[in-house]
Amino acid sequence: MKSQVYSHSSLARRFVANDFFKDSRLRDDEAYKSSIIEAALSLSTTGVVDIILSKTTANGKPCYSTTNLCDKILFRLCARYLKEGFRIFQKNRNRIIDELVNFLKDASALRVYRLDIKSFYESCDRNALRKLISENSTISYQTKYLIESFLELCDQQAIKGIPRGIEVSSILAEISIREIDKLILKEKDVVYYSRYVDDIIVVTTGAENEIEFLDLIDKYMAARGHRLNREKQEIVNFEKVNKTSSENSFEFLGYNFTVSNTGGKHASDHPRNIEIDISDDKLRKIKRKICKAFYSYGKTSDFKMLLDRLTFLSTNRKLRKNRDPQVLTGIFYNYSRINKTDTAIKTLDYFVLANVTSTASRIARTRAPFTSPQKSDLLKISFIHGHKNRVFREFSPFRAHKIGIIWK
Picture (cartoon, helix red, strand yellow):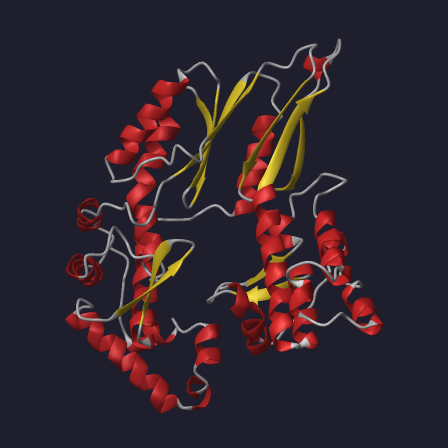
């Protein structure tokens, strides 16, 4: 068993950059910081069954957070030990897209299943989780005790499955479904399988019975309390490349994939062409954020904030996520696998233009018309330029928080 120590030093390493932004006393008051660590140390021996969870709603789903920072750093350390013990290494989004494209290029017959797990966190079977964790000999007794007390807390508060938002929840959800991943991968007609949280992609030979295959996956899911969201599933068939031209499309992980072959005499000698663009769903979400930025300006008349919000959406920046290396994010890095020349990202520029020049729309009626200098500044903002040229704009943590608060 690898050492899983709950000590002052191991807990001190679980503070993240956002903690220091939210609570400035952590930056220069060592006694205050130490008191939080000591409180977390105490919880590590008494358990977390009596801590308070705050509940909110986001996108129609219940979300939870812990009240005290000592709870958070303890859960972060616990999550790290679970991740190490179960050897959980989640593929990043770009790697999944690259792997999928390689399989789609193959000229043989294929069938693609884009699937979604319904209420992923809420459907986790806590008793099954208890069994998986108790049987893992690499997890220390103290970590097992803490997880058991956390699951008991969920029992007492009548929380369904695993509460979204708690620092340890994503790891527990991953543990709950790992065996399902392995079972699906073993199916004889599966040539590629990957999952990103609750979004699943399966590529098969197409020889399987479609209905029976989906029923089998649902059976595997049910064993861990999960089930497929049949309303969101998408199934696309690709015939073996031949002289007849064809084209099919589907969406996955924020991208739209258009898969085609040109046909003709030598079609079978060439792989399929894969054209990738931003998905319609992601475009709608960005447009909603743009609308909220203009609407907020109508209420506050804070033009600098409007500029910053549109700049934030249309550019890129570096993030430091927890203790990991810097993460690149923004309009290019969130959609870096786009290869379509005439990308739909340009429609975001048209959308900004419409909001700047309109005087009759519902949002425009909430504000005074923009002055000529204001219009000039707003029309310099370009999503397509930010994507194509990987434009970076940095914001302080405080400013970034103020920018994003209307999109929560």
